[in-house]
Length: 573
Image (cartoon, rainbow, N blue to C red):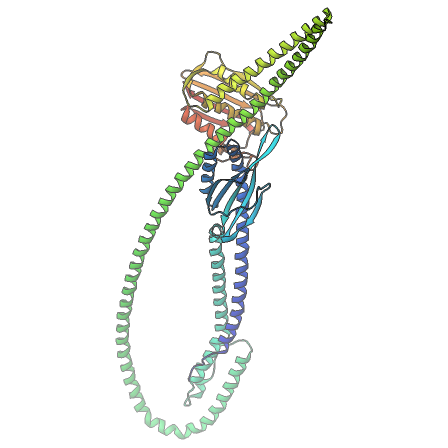
């Protein structure tokens, strides 16, 4: 019986699966598009976050006309994976740095942050650089960070493979489920029906009855019942013929038995020979398969080794790039700290200088008035006495304020020179700590916080003073910014002792402290609880490196019961 070219089950299965394939394709495409939009939104958010990290140092570099530092920061930004291009312009619209894939900007100046989609599959985030000085703000330039669609796709590449693989797995499972259901409920019963009908024997119609093994009362069961009823009717007709053919069968019975015996013997020998040939063929196929698998395994191992060598080379280059960027950020952090010190000292120096200028103007006015009385010969003793009193008060006021400005400038000069120099010299720890505290007066006088210092006057140490100043500055500013947040009046205790050949520094504050999880990451680079609020995460990391590397000492941090923060520093003399 010729086979059916296109069965009903195949048609039905093809139509059902085609609808499912179309729906799966549409849903997967929608998910991929959503993943693309989410990834692009995250990258745009990361570009905006970079503004908080680099805008301060870029603004100061452009304000100070430090073009090499601005270009160095731009080069460091180009090392970030999401950055395709960097444009830095000054307040006149002239390019300070133009690196990577960029697009010319038509606007004269940019006054607020904005995200724009550009040609060539790129998009950029532009923001202004605003410098604050003495309560006034100035637009010194703008920065545009570029990223591209390639970066977005590299970010969602794993997600895309997961979505497509998930769709393929679900589709394969559904195809298997449908095929199994169609095979068990329709295809297999129809094939069984076809096979049993094809095996119909006219000589023994009773054994040719249909037995599809179907328990449900469906159309196939009805067909089986009707066909078996037809067989029963045929058997009744054949029973009448069997009586007349009985004698003929008896005569041929012996011949049939001999034929059957001969056929069985031939079948046995044929089966034995076929089995031997089949075993030999199977062994040959297994040997070929093993050879192919061994060859493929060797090729895979060679490919994996090459890929590992390539990945190790890329990792080494990435580590060098990260170390360079880290060193640049640490230097920028130190210069930013010195810049803040300059701004504070300048503000404090302006106050006594302003009072001195006012006193000088007053004294000049009184001198002019006295000269007029003298020329007009109207000068009296009382007027002269009043002028002398005013002159004494004015000169006293001038002397006091000019001495105050001189003290501030002297302290700041020594600390600033030390922070920008790594020269080693001998210092008195108590006196030098006083100069450091004096340089921090602009930050301390705005608060009610108290700094208590216990240090013998005879402790002398040979080191780079700028390193020690940077350590104390970072600890005190860390307490002011983080420890005393939302605290009106706090206390800082600094206890310095010389034990044997070591200088022991015990620093503590009664601020809000930090929890154990944050304490474990306290000295890690770029870790900060002020992300997005001006914190770079490098202050404590720089302090740790200065103590352990520049001073060859040790530093430990603790926060008992999450109340207050303590540093224990040991420096060899």
